Amino acid sequence: MSTAKEEKRYYDLKRYFIDRFGCRVYKIQIDAGFTCPNRDGAIALGGCIYCDGRYSRLRQAGQLPTVTEQLLAGKELYGRLRGAKRFLAYFQTASNTYGPLEHLKKLYDEALAVDDVIGIAVGTRPDCVSDEVLDLFQSYADGGSHVWIEYGLQSMHDRTLRYINRGHDLACFLDAVRRTDGRGVNICVHVILGLPGEKREDMLETARLLASLPIQGIKIHLLLALDGTEAGRLYREGKLPMMSREEYVQTVVDILELLPSRMVIQRLTADGYRDIHLAPEWARNKLAVLNAINVEMERRNTVQGAAYRADAT
Ligand code: SF4
Image: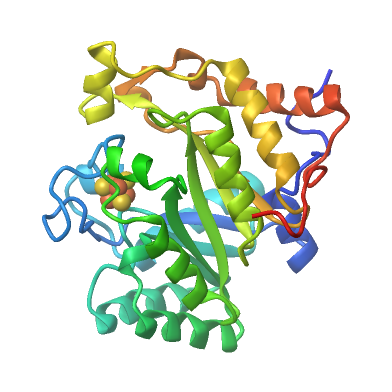
């Protein structure tokens, strides 16, 4: 019987860090107070249909600690629980390049000044990254920091992006990847499976496209219906079919087979919304999903990259 703890048939973040740094590196999530142009009216007000717009629990609680305070708290926690010694500052909440360059630099500099923080991972939208910001990331990478930029794409299909109110199209994402490539900055792309109107082949098409691009990592989520979101409303009205666990597992394994073997798989499920989670019910048990993916890879006797073709588009 396989468990998520055994050697994986895909290249996960833990293994990547050990290969790269000889030890585990822990990502400390930071809410640096950013907003999102898809929520504040710069692009749209409603946001993506699955977005709860609550930002982090820290922000919900009122007073947001500084970047340094959040990192010190994360270091203390991971140090105590896991004996962690190296960290990445993960600017996770909202669009973390959405602001004036000087403000961004101040926040990233603050993170990199904390002892044992060896780099940054910055989550953002592809329409939110100027060449000046990329120059800044490149300067960090040139200076020896480990830098990831995480672009939300979700789907390569413009009809889907329109439906989920992403506020950007595929061309915008491709342009961001083109401008980021070659700077020593690692690119991770977020995708969501089970978006409205998408069939399995549509999702695999997105995977084939990503396999053909100069990106180093991927996060695969599934569509969740959360209370208070447009997706939640559609679900309650019976207008949002959700993936079954079996469909999700089969599609994830198909995607893993299509991706290059050294693309880092940073996430394979979604979680963290227990209080507003409506559906699918099976997604509440993250470990069971991960185990089912491992079991299916064993059943197929397959590995990440088994169906990868360098010339695929
Ligand atoms: S881009 Fe991110 S923060 Fe902005 S609306 Fe979409 S999911 Fe929410």
